[in-house]
Length: 329
Image (cartoon, one colour):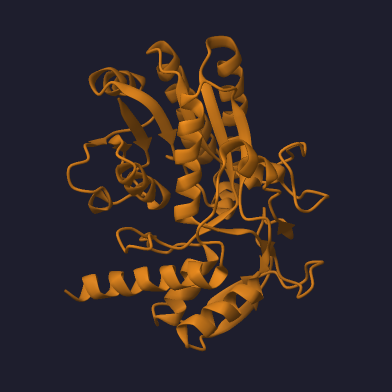
């Protein structure tokens, strides 16, 4: 039996492949390479270049490779961009997910793990935010993911497609063994941007909004190491194999760090004092969002291994150094 990873040539997807391989699983990848990298897929893992919205292709892969489960990462994921170009996000994240879900149902696939987001909560009144909090997204990105969750939930009830939807908080870091990391050019994730500044690859780091109702007036986020996130997906796969009911779960650590705290930590870990510039708020950014994590720990038995901001930044810095050395050669 095989696990199909969509978006497996991307940041999180490539880490997922290693997590699955390390666990002895058979893996194939579907990616259109619009943002992913062919070299991110390990040698020996079949990479099929195509779109998740191509139902004929999806069904062929499910049958040809005897696919048992799909882990669906492929998506657009930049909140400010979703505000500028919402139709792109509803196509890539919602329409294509619906097509993939329909292909799964028509081919008799019974296990589906969905990459969702804490952006479905919008600006929650209570922190930490639990899975029982009514979703009220404030960006097209969050809305596009919530729509996909609803489609998946309804398909589960109607057709028996068992699933786990994982609502990610802020993913960062890189594979501790140095096999994968965030390679996207012009990335917007704070830790990636700050590490690039520490490496001299950016002239400055912009802080978007310094007038929030938080202790230091900047946004607060729950940062989770990408390898812990992928371990949660593996735990979700094991959970679905036991035949238990479908779930929607938060995936974070349950504590937040402000933008300034993150930047201070990057400076301390790297030993570099880079330039920081305060600018206006970005559309779609809530002041604070931190996960309530009791449910994922209890139901999946998930145990984080890298719950330390210093470790997350250290691994991100190591990966950035690897990229720089590779570029020089």
